[in-house]
Amino acid sequence: MKSSDKSNLQRNNADQFATTQWSLVLAAGNRSHEESNRALEKLCRAYWPPLYAYVRRRVSDVHQAQDLTQAFFERLLEKEYLADADPERGRFRSFLITAFKRFLAKEHGKATAYKRGGGQRTFTVDFEPQDRNWGERQNSLTAQQIYERQWAVTLLDRVMTRLRREMERSGKSQQFHLLKVFIGGSESANYATIAPALGLSESAARMAASRMRRRYRELLRDEIAQTVDSQEDIESEVQQLFATFSE
Image (cartoon, rainbow, N blue to C red; front, side, top):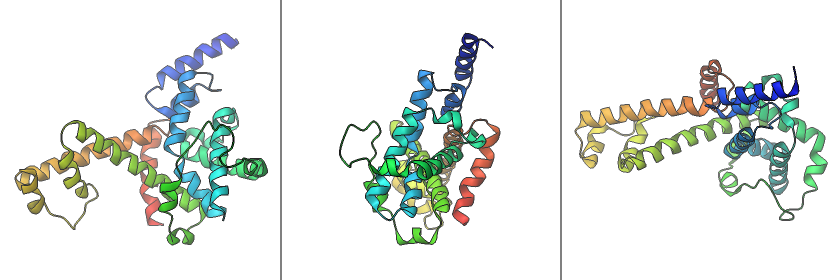
């Protein structure tokens, strides 16, 4: 195949899979496609917490863990890491942890040579919220378990944030904050006490909560779709997502 034909094929594939971020990145192959570069950076900025949690479990020094995480993403965005991706790269979750493990094994010395606060960084993150929520309970889990669990937490947080923003734009902010407890099947609240605050009957409050749960599930599947290469992978990712909390 001629290089020009191959380039056109990659562009066509990128357009075909433009509905999912990770598929767009993969379709572009060597990331020469401008949209794939933006998609990869978007995914990295969304899903850095699981990798940071992973290295926090393995590295005792917090600042070193931060430097390693930031250095990895800078190099991921600068170099053609996708060309050497694991066959399981159809799932962004699998690709990230595989690439990160290789990075830690081969380039640990180079990464720690970064001076904190020095130079111009191309990828910066705010570690403070993650460090604040780091607890002793993490010490009972392996680094891999922590990675999988933090991935699930990060994804679910993004879904809830998307739902909140949608409802706020629709003028239903109070409804979201009062009914969100029912998304996870909470037994500590009841519709009879919440409905009056919303100016709804109990049955109307139940219906509103049902609509929220349905939309939450739709957003969950959509968020997962951004990190897998095919629709067939979505269901197994959903199962893996909730399995992490039973470990």
